[in-house]
Image (cartoon, rainbow, N blue to C red; front, top):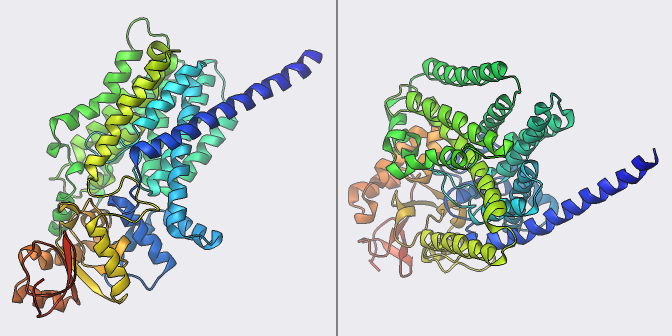
Length: 524
């Protein structure tokens, strides 16, 4: 009894020290991650989500083509959560978004530490895991069009760390299973974290659940039962995909056109290096942890999880997620998104291996890894957004397109309707900055981002098709017939690149773009 009284406070003190150490390390790496990867709140899907949040806060926004600003509200509580935070805390939306950006990066790194803690007792292994994760947060996930963590805030920014926490609890379960036990508290926490992830991003939570199911099945001690469980999961996954594709109503020709804009849905359109990216988790983890003499049971488990879960996702995608599929429902569900979890596990386990085997106590080696990987990722981000600042909050953007969009916000009525080149986000210097989120005005649906919105909300197909027809060739000069079509849709303003020919009255212009009224006037 006396020894128990002494041991319990010691164990509690050790746990407190470990948590304090994890907090300090992940806090410092969060700062480093923000420095390396930057912050671009309005680009890509960040702008799509911001438009919806702004609509919740100010319902008078986007009176036309509203659904393209709000479609994602159907699938997630994320935007409503952010709007509630803004109203409750009485702070600006962009302050809340930046705080969420920093907080979700920290939580992702902390969750990575929890995964590493389940796999190794050595501090340098845990350090290596979270350091490599911090440096590679914005690495692309094969050809899926995903990054591990975006340099902006979306629903996936929140679902990712909670999914990783669920994986950490699943590793707790597998450890108990090896000794014939079960941990109900760990199971309960796993379900809780998955529930939070599902509230934010249901699709990503489903794929995390699939990863956990494979992980737990592979940890079953009895070999025949293990083979049966893994086989049953594979048959169930393949069968569900086939049943869904076979029973779902056929896609219309117009929706097939929308789906064709999402090349990353279809493996047949991928480049060779994107295919290599699919093999990376199995190759890296297998080379390290399945070789003769490897001693990490957790590493071997991760390697087999990557092989089974990744192989199953590839098989489903090849069989059912094809551009020629009748329903296109499996393609829309993007089964290869499961590779986000596999990449997270790969990077954490690789970092753990490097920390324990190569870096160890060599300070110069740690600094070298930080300089090389961090420098490469910093350079990649600057190349991705060359015309924008590396941190776009709270500083005013130097991007000419953003400045033009801000002029529109400040100088046009809230009911104004705009049109621009359908591929405006790919124009030189535009850097994928989202018009709706910045200008806070209605706009005809574009090809790139609004095509993505229509691809997950097929009821918007007709509006998207109409927008593409009206916008075609706009940056080469709108003729009388095209102007008439645009007016019929209610458009009264046109956004063009600076070099675009036009006879319209342009009320604003800078070095890269101009804003013109739809009607006669002078060229500027």
